[in-house]
Length: 192
Image 1: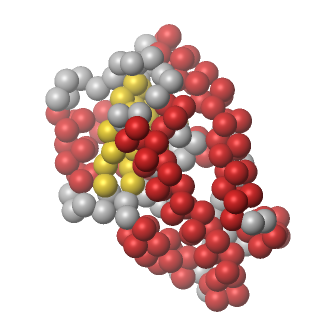
Image 2 (image 1 turned 60 degrees about the vertical axis):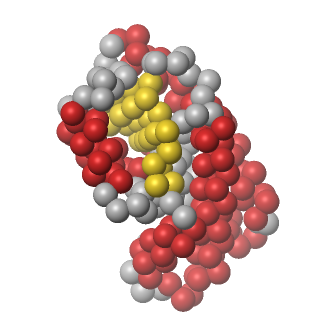
């Protein structure tokens, strides 16, 4: 593989493994790691603790409103994300940027060759299992099962819609459910 671009962007929905992979990749390449999670707060996952405002968000809003709000949240974050990408590029500072706010439709707007974009995804069953396994570690799972179910369905919808957008934008998509897919990707980048 050729030398990776100055910026490597790793997008995907919740629990697809963005943060873990991005951290490993950044350490391997000696790059700064940036997460969009640090740029703006969103209700996020309703575990391990369930804050009252998070419970109200998932319990009182329709699926359509939750999905709409998430997209607006990402849209509002994009100018700051774009500023980070441009600033690092201008300074020649290599970086790895990860997060769900790296929506394919926005990433596709970036100058070709200025970043390497990846979209991590998996099938619904794989992601549902991963989220349920983590949520059940919390002792109060059954008390908030409906709220967790709403979060999971929101995440699965995001996964499907963003995958379609990534394919349309010709962004490289990596199925994290495929055995060894992330190890192979790490080896590919490390060899560059």
